[in-house]
Image 1 (cartoon, rainbow, N blue to C red):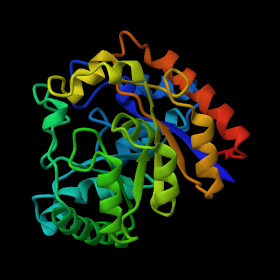
Image 2: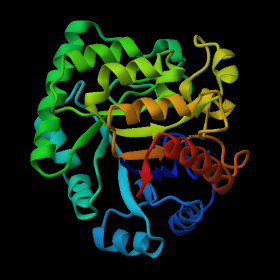
Image 3: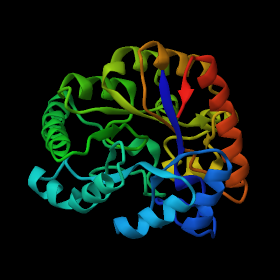
Image 4: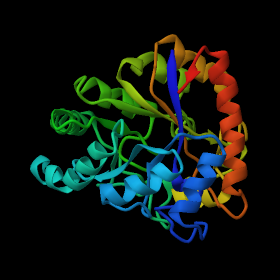
Length: 298
């Protein structure tokens, strides 16, 4: 069984809260990721959208594009408009042989609003989720036809946040809509991460290996603190530095035959948590549990 090990640039710079970023160039970010042992990186705001430019930069560090966020607006928007909005990124990712585009819903989300408490996040009823799921499926099927799969990212402070909401979305969408399983976001939302794998393993095509510090999450006042407040306080970290046991998580994915990318993603203060040091810690932990689960790291 084979898998890839990648990382997200959010350890070096944050796209939702730009001041929570290290003053490093894209090349230095890639250099550190390569030094830490990663072969892939998801895209971020400092990545050029020109395939020839990006291809030259990442080749220097033997790094490939292993995904990247698309700020989707299908909840309130139109499919044809989303096709236009995703076109440039889709073309770039095809040129870079990326495994998927990470679809994150930004209509109605409060993840980037530092004054919006977690408790005020948008809550959809089943009829709304059903309609949303149908639109997502149609859009995902179109992207696949263009040669680039989507991966739907459930996310804190977004319309699909909790395990129950994810269950409804999966029930009301087709197999043409793959799932990004984010361990940390599901744990933060109070979900059972192993049960989510059991229920939706057939849809998972991408994994974000994010750890959490439950003592910080449990200390939040969700009627007062925002998602970004939680990030600043240190709710997230890399595998091996937080509260989650990644051994059973990786074993469960392996048991269902998951072969794809495990992407370390931990949005946190890079000053308090030096990115290279944290990247190495996450890589060592994942290598250990992935080897124990029978994975051959590509």
